[in-house]
Amino acid sequence: MQLPVSVAQALIDDYVSPAWFTARQAGDSVGMQHLHNLANNLRLAACIPLQPGSTAPFTQLPKSNVQELVFRWLSPGWQAAKVKGDKSAMAYYNNMANHLRAAAGMPNE
Image 1 (cartoon, rainbow, N blue to C red):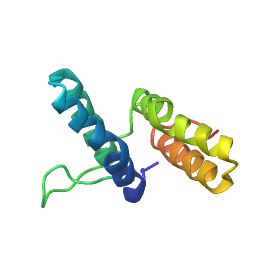
Image 2: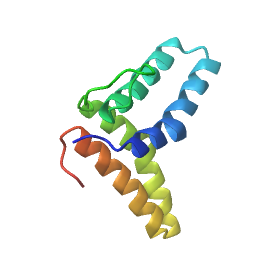
Image 3: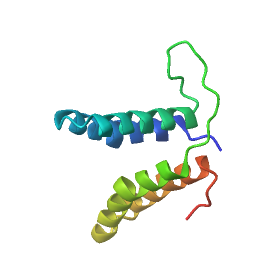
Image 4: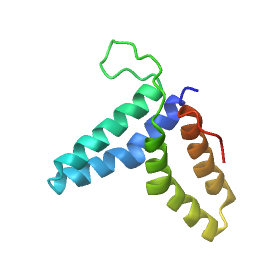
């Protein structure tokens, strides 16, 4: 199932891009390349073209990307929301994770 463009872009803007800049500041070229590839995988799963004016066929999101995004960023956000009792934020993180899972052909949780 295609990842919604808004979900892909939010994950790139809120998590992947800031992590890329942190890796760049640290001189971590391997981390930079990994995060660049992660952002591109999100784009392809949402059919966002990598080059302006081109088309992007749907590419299933790798399960390893889902696991990384969920465990590195979404799960900690969900846990923090749970501690605060913020059910709206908990639902947000859960929905984001389920969109990722669907784009990788994984079951929802």
